[in-house]
Image 1: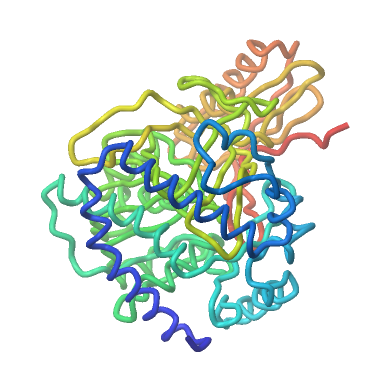
Image 2: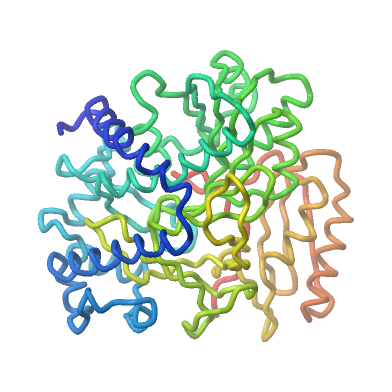
Length: 459
């Protein structure tokens, strides 16, 4: 492959088209079938990592890949983003691939060139919203497997709804920086005849409306908060588009946002959960707020603060990820800060047979007031019913300062009192809460993500 987007895109599209029929046949697989494939991929990953990664070779020196099972897997050591950035060169399984090469590739991407290293790998970066930026490499087969996981869910949802999709005309309302995984995927898999339009999070809303009105997308992809704002424009009569499918990603999709999107556009609304480290992990269907795990692409372990597995129905402190589809940069029991709840397995006709999960927040979003701990959902439950499109909660010594961008007429004092009550219920005495309406909530540079919760620095 040469380092041009056209060649790169066609290569990925060809790989995707070759894999899609095989993926569709998996619709009749059971959860046990998927776990057998996942475990085969896991053992192959561990063998590859031991042979090609000096760092993994040392930490897994006593592990025999063929002996790894669900029972013994939990004995393997964990790894963090700090480990990744400190040992990047020795984690990568291609010895030519170094952090310096990756950083130069990201610099080229910022200048409009491909985020493609050594004519073989995509380099992606995280926003640093958890406190430290991360850099990761993806190989082509891994990216294809990750994209297939979400595409099969979209296809089945369209079939269940009796819809025949129109030719793809995507509009991406998210970061357009090629170093983000979402943009890299969009550029590789949209195909040369449907490159789509990109709208940055900082694009003025009237300009977004005008661009979408002219382009008339059949699919909207992006941050739920931005799509919410566009839905309100549609409900007000200022935006006239008819997308058939809306793909929400990167930020949490709240039930009230889903309802507004469905009312405004009459489209299938799908929620995708993933990360730069994992690609797509789970997909939410139009009539279900839970997320369905792909099951064959990753091993996921919800654990408590001491690293012990938590049972279904309990909220985890974090999530351990083992990405079994990406061999160039192995992540084995890698710590994600996401707090998740694994629900009891459920089966729905026409849907993916994976386990269902809820993502309740991020470990780093926890507020601590002395010995009292307040989780993000306490704030969400107080703010979301008020029809707020975007918000940011900044912890103070005795409460919080909150910026909100209302989606409809909103009583700010009602929000403040609900938050005070939530804090009092958590044991915070006489909390002080200030809420103000703003035209826009600040977004993180580069990624354009919202930082919903800003705790005080650790003492």
